Image 1 (tube, rainbow, N blue to C red):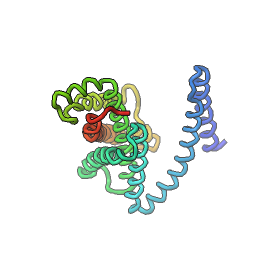
Image 2 (cartoon, rainbow, N blue to C red; image 1 turned 135 degrees about the vertical axis):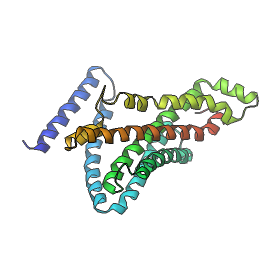
Image 3 (cartoon, rainbow, N blue to C red; image 1 turned 180 degrees about the horizontal axis):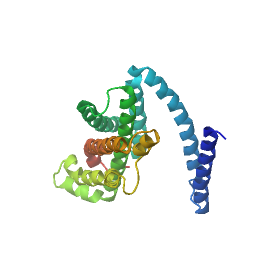
Image 4 (cartoon, rainbow, N blue to C red; image 1 turned 90 degrees about the horizontal axis):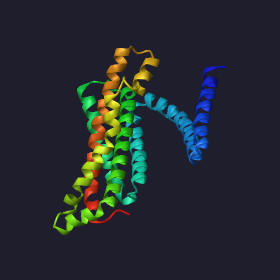
Length: 245
């Protein structure tokens, strides 16, 4: 059995474990999990072809990253429930986080300025920014629903919508950053992060892998901090003006 055959067997076994565990617990997410696995397989195969083409045509890296930002915006907007009218807020927050982190790393010369380095690093940063925006946005809307009488009280006392929603934004940001902070704090102790493992499997030395992984982890924390703060700041006026649906 070749490498591809062994990969198929391993993926099938892992999928069976996941679906079996959900079925045994009578959790009605088996279909969602199966669709997610199938989509991941198809998308990764397609992405491998596209990225191979991008590496041969470095100028296309910016187009590919723009597509990623658009997909991330759509995902977070749908997750938060803002609707099309709020998509620009989500996009602005994701782009802000990604630009700050990627700009700092590339500006310092910590990674080579070429498509093979920029694309994978920027892709991880955009993904992290998307996650932070989704978590912060969801949490802010949940907090607004749960504490709406307090928000109305502040408004009745003359506070502006942004002022009334400020406490909600602080809670949302702090909760959204918990995964990034825990991942950074426990790197190498609880789990070996993906970039570290990938570099080791690719033949890099443990020291080289650790250096790149540190760059990724701190870059993610910086990007997610900026993205979460930007998202809640942009949402504050609307949240304070009316109760979220």
